Amino acid sequence: MSKKTRFQTRAIHAGNEPDKETGAVVAPIHLTSTYQQEGVGLNKGFDYSRGGNPTRQRLEENIAALEEGQFGIAFASGMAATTALFQTLNTGDHVIIGRNVYGGTYRMSVEVLSNHGFEFDFVDTRFLDQIEAAIKPSTKWVFVETPTNPLLELCDIQETAKLCKTHEISLAVDNTFMSPYGQTPLALGADIVMHSATKFIGGHSDLIAGALITNDASLAERLYFIQKSGGAIPSPFDCWILLRSTKTMGLRVQRQSDNAMELAQRLQSHPAVVSIIYPGLETHDQHDLALKQQLNPEGDPIFGCMISIRLSSIEKRDAFLSRIKLFTLAESLGGVESLVCIPYGMTHASVPTEMKKTMGLTEDLIRLSIGIEHIEDLYADISQALKD
Ligand SMILES: Cc1ncc(COP(=O)(O)O)c(C=O)c1O
Image (cartoon, rainbow, N blue to C red):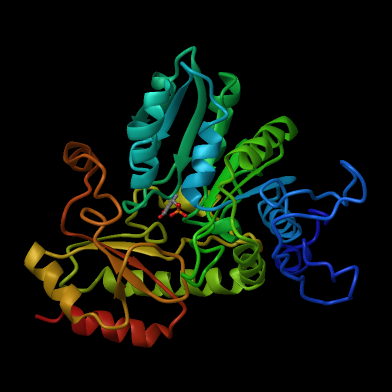
């Protein structure tokens, strides 16, 4: 599908052509592990579902179109996608990673892949000079998350991409927190985009999946090979659910971000809230960068659905958690329902205490993932939970 077609049209039509055989408007789910061959090695493009499946192929086309990329490679989870990307490395290769990336990315790098001879350094990717200082002759990738989880620190994708090009290094962006609707790293110069499709792409907290998207044909070929070889693939059913979910992603993400912006504005003057982090607020250190790179398909700034707040003590935090009703205490984010999480002991439990301390990830930090519920109900619920 032409990249000129607008986001919402691509979301509905890319990979969603009516079924050629029956005319079914909604793509069928190909629940099959294997495919009839007309002769030895003669098939219709599919031979075994680990290597390829028509429903997965449709999803990969759809997600690639939404990220303005040519190639989409779907995985069983976001972590499987990140791992596959790192599996393109050779022994001795070095990767620079944002210091407060998702805890699982840290765990996979340090506790698994380091044992295989890959080297990782964690830096504060808000600062270009810190990225540059970490570059070595063996550096192959810079891997960033923006905004980061849960401190919502930003990395300038365009400037980092320029730096990487100068040093002939590739740039990977974990775009999970913004979704393809709110930020398009490939258009800003990144070489690959990674998603935990579990979040906004799925959008309903009912599956685990991941994806990589790139315009680099040889990298894509290697990744399809790793996907087929390792087999960390999403099931046809999950691919179908994701194809259905991306049709409404724009509507969901816009509403979630609008709700989050409104709540952040109200909470910043709430007496019980000691501090609030949200890239849409002028008080956010990198608000200008958010205005520049977080744009919806209409070109309007969009700030995401994640808000982090601090109350005055752990006791207040626990009182808040015990009173809040519409926000479920759970890991994950980006779904239509609002969630609350304490990253220190939940999503980031596997990050060493010292590292959490350095990055300012404290026990009192409360992370809110805002859903599509009515804004007044969300605000009323937070207000009653903040009361003494
Ligand atoms: C920013 C980010 N990247 C990657 C992941 C890993 O994705 P998954 O849980 O789908 O493996 C997560 C999960 O929370 C995440 O928040």
